[in-house]
Image (cartoon, rainbow, N blue to C red; front, side, top):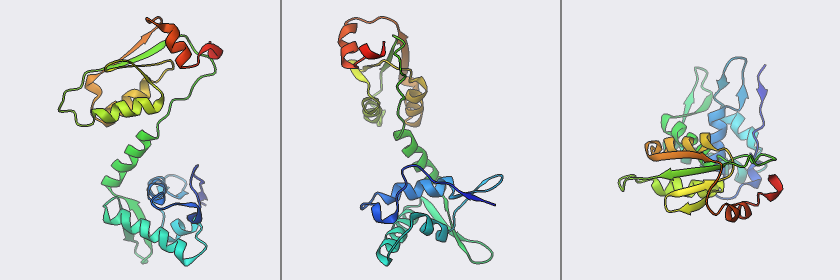
Length: 199
């Protein structure tokens, strides 16, 4: 028997503001509302509605509008099985979009103790690299500080996260990741990252 999985951060229909539901419906469809014995099953539209627990016609319409929007954008497709029951699944475009959202949701878990090493990310992007500004923005979102132009610094291990983002943006050929035990003006960055309590 399939069991229903609760996804962290998913709210009921009444709790969503305008536009918020789109991303979470994409996640629910991508993960499958129900997990079978061997595989993830695409949810049918009734399961999707029940999961978001609408309490009124307005809330049900809000869900349907989000589903139709994703369908019109080509991120999902609503199909029918041999019995005529509708079910929802991601298209290739939707999978790409969902993976991209997961990339932007990446964060770095801070360890209880700092290992006294610095992670330095250097890059030299060609002007033709259209998404280079997005990479810088994600480094800042993670918590990196600018060391100098095109050089960012961070005190915790994050190689996997950095290269995941760089590969997604097709910029990994221009990235250099360095681990250093000593840097100039180290005290400034120890204070900046509030590392004294973690040393």
